[in-house]
Every structure is written in structure tokens, then in C-alpha cells.
Length: 88
Image: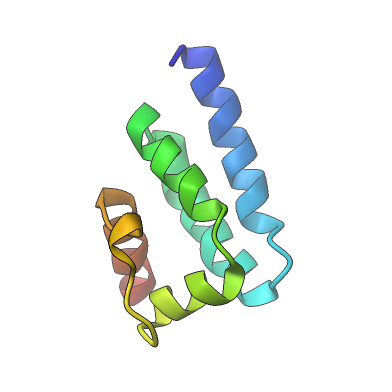
């Protein structure tokens, strides 16, 4: 992935994080994106984009610990998101 493409994808991901449709998820993902997406490499941005395709209630349940994170969503980006919520 070229640097220009990566920058565009980071900006889109940050926008999408703040404009989910559910206020709680907007705040969680928006704050996370502001703090971390700017430093994501190609693999991380792909993983984060996959997370952004998930439904808000599912993401909220994973972050709050009321539902287990499915295997397909596990990885460094999800670990970072879960750690971010614990310490924010």
C-alpha cells in the first residue's frame, strides 16, 4: 500500500469512527481512532477497516465485555482497542 493511499484510508477510518450512528460507539471508536489510527500501518488499517464493517451493538458488547470477541476479530488492533477502553 502506497503512503498516499494509506493516509487516505487513515483519514476515512477516523471519519467513519466518529460517524457510526450510535453515539456510544461513535465516542469509543472516535476517541480510539484519534489516538491510534494515525500510526497504523497497512496491516493495522486493514484490520481496523474490517472492525468498522461490524455492527455497533456487537462492537459495543465486545468493548464492554458483555460478549466475547469472535475469533475473526481478534488480533493486535482489537487488543489495542480493548486496552484503550480499560485505561481511558
